[in-house]
Image (cartoon, rainbow, N blue to C red; front, side, top):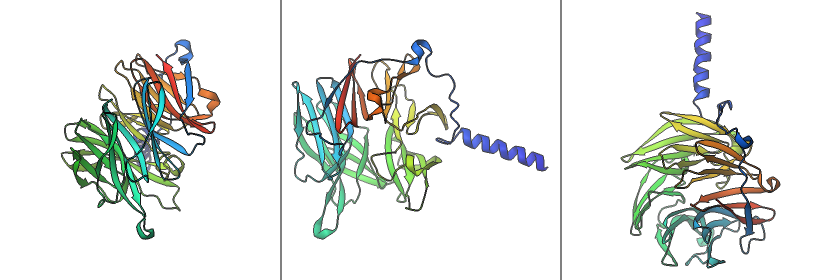
Length: 358
């Protein structure tokens, strides 16, 4: 009886480990191409963003339908944000209307004439800081305030399900906003978790990532994968991860969700995971945290991260791009169009744009 109990216990432990994100031993199988030693060598050009003389500016989103039309948003440690737009062979800075104290945490483009930028703005009346969600819209070469709700103490972390006149926004403290023509309604998903990302997986259906709130004395936190179907929120599974890869500082260390054109759901963080039926399966491990992932219409996929990390999926196989710039650059965002790859990165004392022709 004791032997059977022991065997059953080890079997349950094996099943738990092999189906829990970030707890799986990295036995990923042969997923990297063997030709050319699994390397793809792009020829990168680089240029610093204007007025970027330090690493205090953190890019949080990039949209680039071509390499001559690039928009980058982000925020600085002085609690202000910047939007850079490259067009007509020059960079310009788009000024935020009204309150300058805005943290832009996400960008989502429908097309080059409908670009939404979300985050939160903060006020400091009588010494008491208050925050509220805000969305800006870049359209017809103008940046306007599209949505705000000063009575909702929350900030936007991710946008999804966008059209020319509507979109859905996820807030850090668990509010989900449905916005149309600048007006919105919201529901509360959960009040005891920090939400980090959302993707639309079907009509009225969303996949979400959230994590437990962290106390100063804790060394680990719990990350949750959840879904929302027809306004019903439910936790599907969870995993335990160390604090250093799930930082309380919101712009570093969070896993992100990515949905491929084929409908495959990925989670990128300390490793890349693929959702297969009801479980997460490992794709590959990474020595450095992964920050962003994008796929173009031809099926080319790039996954980028810290210290020059680039992984490329082409013709069904993953390739390793040689570490960039001696690992002195932490890549933050990636956008692929049909002719080029555009990356944002922080390092060497500046914030950079990197471009490679396909």
